[in-house]
Length: 311
Image 1 (tube, rainbow, N blue to C red):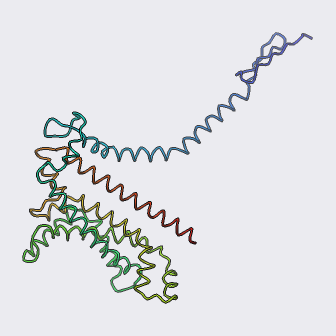
Image 2 (image 1 turned 135 degrees about the vertical axis):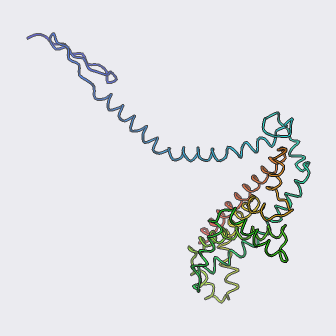
């Protein structure tokens, strides 16, 4: 019988050669395919765990890219009338943001309409949400349907309908500030009702019953219990309504007459020039809205935290 010599490789080798007699035998090590399989499984698990996060980040980046460009070009120093090509950095646009004729009056008009329409729509929308959620009356389903109608109606249709109404009642309505206000209240109120109603559906009525058992009347119960609990929803609805009002163009343009809001001003001036001051105002509105929204979120978080600590 011939002598046999066997040489085994280290565990990191891909194969274990063995010489038995005159014939060479190659034995595949199971450690290599096992480690490769583990690496593939680990890589796939990593992809599955972070793919949704990566998709969300890409979506946010896609949405934020135009806003970043607008803010960036608010610091541009264009040589011509159009702010389309980067020429150099400057703070002159922010310091002299109202140097363009008519831009200050347009912003003031937009702010006045937005604030007034938001206050009225928030008050009426909250009362409508309370009525729809807590009371059963004849026409409740129809009212609920009519509330959603302005949200689903195209703006051009809603604006043209309101324009027809105002033109047929010229003895009462003259196209201008108040027709814009009425139009904005009409489409803002739907968003307020939907937002506040979502909060009221999950509202614990036992809190109000406990307040009444302790001697509080209807007004005190609403002021001390109901209103503080639905206030975050009202603030969120008001912020949404103000953003929709100050941003609206189609409905406003059809019912504005000679009154000029900021979107109408931008549309009018864009035909002859696009000054960087437009970017400045748009950036300021966006940053202020973000700051107010973050403040509302922080306030709600602290309110919930204090409520839990008190419990």
